[in-house]
Image (cartoon, chains in turn green, orange):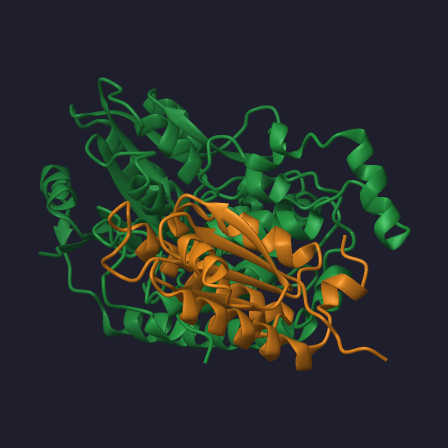
Length: 381
Length: 140
């Protein structure tokens, strides 16, 4: 089913070629709007933006190393009901996977959506991005993309590294998109690979009248190498994080900076509860309750229930964690929460043989059961 | 020094295990007083939060017990409970909670004898572990 084609890159202007491609997508009658990472006119910041005016696509910047929000939540808002039109959304791999998780939870739909996945070049942490980007954002993005695709480290001068989530990301290539834009292992000075992954994508590609192309063997090689490096970083991260949290005392030290702001769950694309129990009346404890708790050990850290919150969150989202790292991006006190959540998720996902975001058909583990399974957790032998 | 007596918070379903506890009582079977019973309508309504909270508040063990597979009063609540316990058993041991501290059993309403035996076994298994870390250390 997969069809492969290419678009031409003129004057080595990769980002310009991508903008032109987005314009041709938006020009299709069926597409009402396209959501892309877009430079805000008032600041050197790139945000997911819903665009209907093709001229505005000149500000599209899908390669900039900034990832302020996981757009899965935005696309979920756009598709939770009929919008009266069809939207195309340009998304990173982790955004697509998170969105697929939300679709399974009936918090989004794919009917009136075309997902355009793009090879992810990774991103800095928000605050690192601000110090890096400088005045000329076009030049910054171009240099960054050229460095990464040329096999150099993220910021070639070595001053800033990718966010830890991106360093440990073993899935930089989109899965589950209708159309993917391939960059790794492609001669992006001259062309970009466009592949359809679904019938919907294939139909759209047919209308775009692109030049057919074979996927060059260099692509698979480049991806394999990248995935291998990232997997090694990831596994090392798992080992270190497990060692740093393997007792309640250590976990308490790990999370000691937490001020219960709950930013990590606000930023989390797969923290799916419409209202988090930790901000409901359930946790409006009676003042006398705090005094009783304090009296038990002679001291009660306020606000309370920090560890309780994090472990409960893990029980909710760990099977769906896509490792996007927005939790760490959102933490005001630099707690390496992504490392913790991913390390736990690795085990819970393996326990249910579940890969979040892989397929819309695969049901979330806590929504199904079999009559004969997990006999080993029953009994007290 | 007297022997360590663990505190076990037990969530029992109304229809099977709680009824078995009742039967054990009316049959004058003795079982350890370490078990603190919370009756719930179904093992399938036990939110993982309940288990996590109990352990963080210093329970030395948590026991969830419901109807045997196929016998659930609400058709399949116990199967859902089993998945949730499986999930917790993947998460909690990573933070140092020994697997013995969280147990899931099925005890039928007519099984007063089994009930007393399970309560004794769980209590005996927890004694050598000593008090839980949450009881001794400050938990934020």
